Image (cartoon, rainbow, N blue to C red; front, side, top):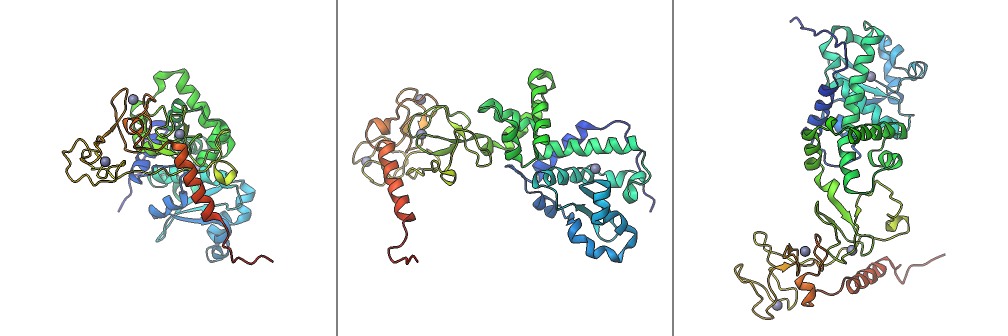
Amino acid sequence: MTIEYKSLPNKPRYEYAKNKAYELLDRLNIKSYPIDLNYVFETLGIKLISIQAAEPLLSASPEISSLLSVKAFQDKSIDALTTIIPTFGYVTFYDYSKSNERIQFTLAHELGHIILDHCLDFKETQYFRSKMTESQYKVLEKEADTFAGAFVRPANLVMSVNEKYTPLTVFNVSDLFSISLDAASVCLQIVNKFCQNPRLKNEERINFVESQFYEFLNAKYCTICGCTFVSSSAKYCPICGNTPLKWNNNSVSFIEFYRINVGGQTVMNYNTYPVNPITGAVSECPQCENEITHSEWNYCPICSLPTLNKCSSCGKQLAPHFRYCHECGKESIYFLENALKSWDVEAARIKAELEESNMPNSYDILY
Ligand SMILES: [Zn+2]
Ligand SMILES: [Zn+2]
Ligand SMILES: [Zn+2]
Ligand SMILES: [Zn+2]
């Protein structure tokens, strides 16, 4: 069998590299960040071996051990290397001693070489790129970097976050995607470029990230009552009416955003009520607890509460436990009818229950 090799590209194929990254996000159904790259390599069947773990095994193959020893990595100051070992397939070796943030981008870069078929398409890249010129090598490096950037921290996603919430700082981007501050800064430069020149924006990719990462992007947190929910249109908290809402993302440490584990506020789970999945009407009356057995009933036959909760001002249909309309901020009819307690009454009950469950058992013996 003869292999048809392609000729090496003269210029980096930036769009090709980005498309491949987005295709992989879609194929692996990745919906949140940071990405677990160990999982990605495992799912794709690519062996990922730290150079530290591989070194004892390399004595069996002297011709690759000179390239793959810890010392060779240090001497050449490289972080990783990908190759195809006959009968073994793709193997990525990486330096485990580097920081996690650096490893994240490095592994995505190596994945780029694999997904872009750099090791298969070109005759010159067989056996450790020994037959490439420096400029040919740089072209492939830029392609792998472009893939890695789009895969591990899509600038389009950062742009969407910035439009919805307080713009992310370089520290936020580093936390969020688990990448180095340098890599985060490159990402924000790309975002700036898009914002200054909207013609560079790619609508298809923006639409992709907004649907692929819908929950990740639209998860909200209220700093007043501590509730969380997912909505792309919410401007007001449906429980306490507060505005503006924060982005609910544990990886990002916003200045005003403290959770119980860092000494701040906890997530509060307010009572919800079962609904008919088709009509959205309650299947049990929140006011008198009567079972609503007929889906066509508009009112509870016992206490005459409407079976649908709505905004008293704009008429939007709301979940039964919403005290306020998340779009216009006005009271819901359930709240006006006193079918729902004020949020702070319920919050006090939830807090008391939490404290009780955290209390040490009375027979704990302390020495
Ligand atoms: Zn590379
Ligand atoms: Zn609230
Ligand atoms: Zn009722
Ligand atoms: Zn409303």
